[in-house]
Amino acid sequence: MIGAGGFLPWVRSGTVSRDSFELAGVLDRHGHDGALLWVVLSVWIVVPLGCALCAATYLLGWPRLAALLSITISLFAGTVGVLAYVEGTNVSGTVVAVSAGPVTTSAGSGIAFLGGLGVLRAKWRRPPSATGTVPPGTPANRPA
Image 1 (cartoon, one colour):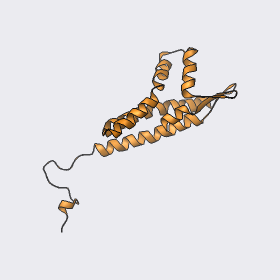
Image 2: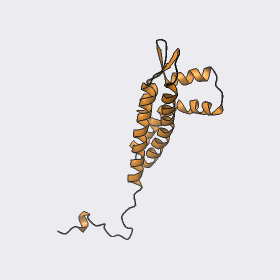
Image 3: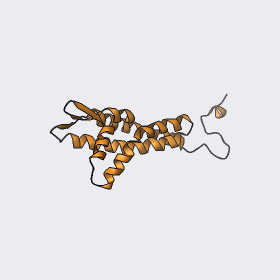
Image 4: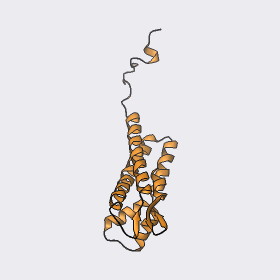
């Protein structure tokens, strides 16, 4: 949902709707003040690639790395989505914010964040005793 939200409309100018990547291109072409905005715009365009990389690492059998990537991407994209939604609701004029993109991105970020935490919790649990004993309730320890 994070990647899909980036391709949904974020702003509308007249009859033209622009997604977040077109908006980033417009902001980049027309100049902007501050290094932080430049960093955000530079990182934003690789968010779909990061989502694909996260899925690929999980499919390759590296769930912890996929979870860490998921958490990192979700924190960044969720912050951008929430800020765009909050700042866009107070603007009126010829360029109007559309909530479909930021809300979808934010919701997807929340799901990805919780999923990443769940995978980390499941994968970093302490293993059974290292002494070779079987934990209670396992098939080898049940009465016949």
